[in-house]
Length: 254
Image 1 (tube, rainbow, N blue to C red):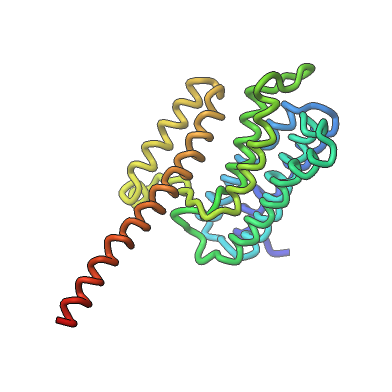
Image 2 (cartoon, rainbow, N blue to C red):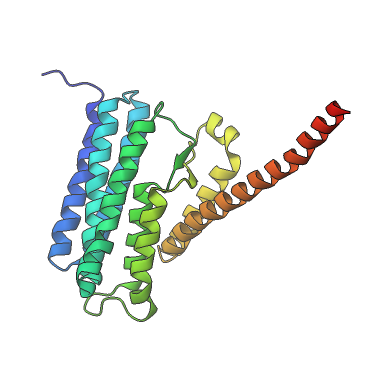
């Protein structure tokens, strides 16, 4: 049996899906916080499989498909079951539908990504990446959920709308930047992206993780604000061009 370089990133991908399974397992046992931590661990393995694929130069279509299947479990099924068991089961059928949204829309988002994939290095994602969606839900749960008490106060009312919003953002056209590559070329092409990524990491570490949800929320909101701004700028540019075109036609007639 021949072992190729592609085994290395695939191993991290398998560890990713295994962590997703453990998250579902612990959620079924009511251990919400532990289940959330396994989703974070899955995100770590998900990041490393891409890094290892670039280091070993073993990026392949097989790796893309395996990664997507793992992500559906770890960042789709696991967060869906997590929010259902944590609180949304109280809403009956509506709670089931809302809880299923990260899984269903995440699968759609990954299918669209795979179909539109051109090359293995991208500067941005179309729609919120499914790991970012899952990490935001997990950060919210770790910050506001307490074993034995669950969610309290406004966090109960905020959970369902947040899940719906994050799910819709995954299949939206909102552009989100990829993580910067800390190479000479990567730093030269995207210095601000690298700077803000480092600052965000420092803030989260210095706060011992308590500001993780705030940092992820800021990242998501920034993408939406930029999308709206670019949309308005595009409309205004079209409006400005129309009078110029009319003037050109009038001058020709004369």
